[in-house]
Length: 104
Image (cartoon, rainbow, N blue to C red; front, side):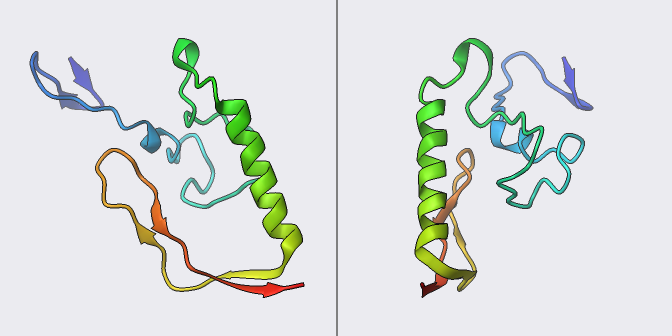
């Protein structure tokens, strides 16, 4: 089988990295930027079809509450030192995201 110009032979190890799909420049304008107001955001963060994450509505609600609380609590929020990325092949993310905050 050929996938995107790469030949996959029987017995080859193949790991689809679903996080990469959410950064496809053919699908998303400025895919590497955080845009919490992005419209038409059909990402694969919670999978798709019969394997869709049952916890997705709760995760979305938690995100709305967390972001809303930060916005209401702090007058200003800016990046501090550069973020420290998690060193993992399959699970992308941050280990830390230092920030400078000003209280209201």
